[in-house]
Length: 267
Length: 292
Image (cartoon, rainbow over all chains, first blue to last red; front, side, top):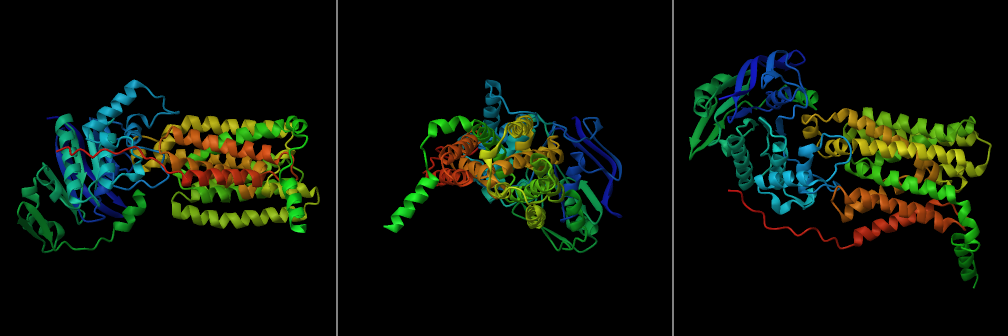
């Protein structure tokens, strides 16, 4: 198995406060790692580090053997679902096309190769049906499908998903996580999947990175998502309940004094 | 029948096509200016709409008016003054107003200041009264040869600039986060866009006037977006609408004693209305196929 992303003794914080320190993490090709934790624990910031947009305090982050840098096209990024507003002159296929060559200069020149590539990406996520539908009239789940196609456009080796299931209904949560799962198996992608709820992806997760209280735990869901481990991590009595294949975490302390600082920094 | 008589007088003041043949050659410069302005306004309007910056455009045009009025007062070139004013405003709004909420408040703060400054300069100016009025409501018929040259050069810079940054700007305007992750310099894009917008506004102010810039920089693009969502058709339609409005405006206004801008704004508005009322046939949508 090949290591795609490697973090060594990585530390990140804002101002004088650390979000997390001493993080050692290897993401292998084809591996799906869920990143869990309270708001403001530094989950999204971890993705920003990998994207080269936020610098580590100390330690190193290397992608395919070289230090992470801004705009590396072999990293795909799928952000939170946000509905495109009216007044965006894009249809489904145009959003995917931006993933193919949206970073290049000048007006795009239509070509058969370009059109075929977009069609192929659209069919890989089953979105042919609304290729020509205006973005603003697509549902959140449909837009997320297109975003996955867009992220796959540059033949990535690593996929960063930042709460891609947020505000989707259950069938679409299922569908979008299935698509991510298919893609990583088919293309041998490493996946970092930031989410506040592990249940929609529980059956697909290889390992969990749980960040809380400036500390973290890494391991399989069975190793990390237990009453003992999380109580220790949160330094408070947290209870993990497993029921019908679902995991419920109760009693997580609901304060996050660093939330605003992080937002200000990342925005 | 006094009512009808005065109506007739108003009508002939608004539309008078006698001696039209002799009139047209004299309008050559103005027509060229209108075509050029239509192209620039139609193109940049698409991004103004995408980036939700209609209000900012209005703010930039008021500062451009202030700059032009100041140069009128001090005997400097109106083109230079309009440029300085609009570029300053565009950069201020671009740098201070990265987020939509900040942008609106920065614009709202700058706009009355610019308008007030402009009115002060015009109040102190004792030259031709037509010049004063023209800066606010348009003065296209008075365009001379050096002025048209500068208008064409500035417009060409905007058009070429837009074509060069088209794709990354489209990406950044659609989804800044993903564009940034893909290596698009999102911050640079927005500053470059503001500079191009400032240039486009400075040109428009001299033709349609500070108060009516939106009719060429926003209305045509808004109309185009009502009838299409294609990244190819929207800019083409928007440009066509803007050119029809500006050139149509000058052809209608030719023989009248009224400024040209009401004709431009009316045509522009009529096109928008037409696009809104048009029953748009969205592409038929097949039943989504489940991937599982």
